[in-house]
Image (cartoon, rainbow, N blue to C red; front, top):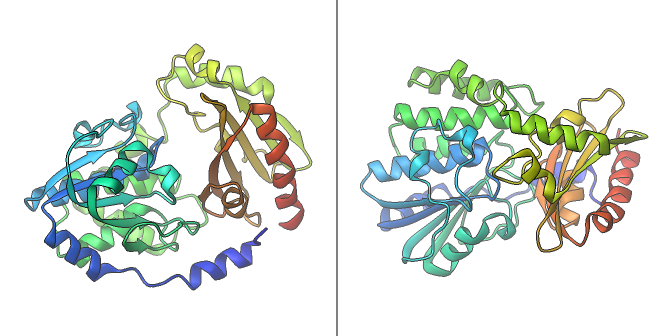
Length: 336
């Protein structure tokens, strides 16, 4: 398993982003499909809309799609109603995927786009990105995908509208947990300040994302918290497929439980298992500084960041736990 130092070395040796090639591909394209990852978060929605809304304003024929559409808590972002929950027709000159580290993350909409597009741009900030597609805008040191979108729009000389500023700031706020994660730096705050000058309200975005929670998530936590176990720095919980329905939630989500659990003083790594249909389990990882869960997720076919990552494994919940938990314990033994 890769150590944190090995992951950082990989990041430093990544090829340079292909800014000009991406700009040329966009200039040459008329029909463009933009997609992001399944179970989208604020960075997925923000980076997708940042690209889609700007290119639409430049006269491009843009289709935006994410499997299952936009989560309810992110529908306040301007333009979110234009995002389709599926795409099953049409041919495209160009596909742009954002915030998606590997092909399993782009869902059916992305898979369709890869088959029906002449070229593909892969825009992402995950160090575990598998470099699929033809043109790569992969910047692992970026704190969020919206930061890459912000820089790319500047490279192309695009004006950032108020609506786009709201989308980008939403991604920045949610992926940094309100500017609290260790990757947050002075430039993160400079970008946020610029977006605020362009009309994005930081307080409103905070209220709609970090400081807002539907009661259904409380119901879900009531079902999940009795499964929580803490063992020598490893804290984990399980959410069964039926729990989502009983809680009244529309999508398979842990409601932020994996991030909540890693804040336990005695915890070093948190894991939440989410039972899916078709004999699969989605696994979310979080870690305190000094522990690398990106390598763990990558080993299991997923990806993410050193302190936040995830994957999907085949098998029952019990089989997934038997596979994942020993590897998570090894991460704790190697870190610190």
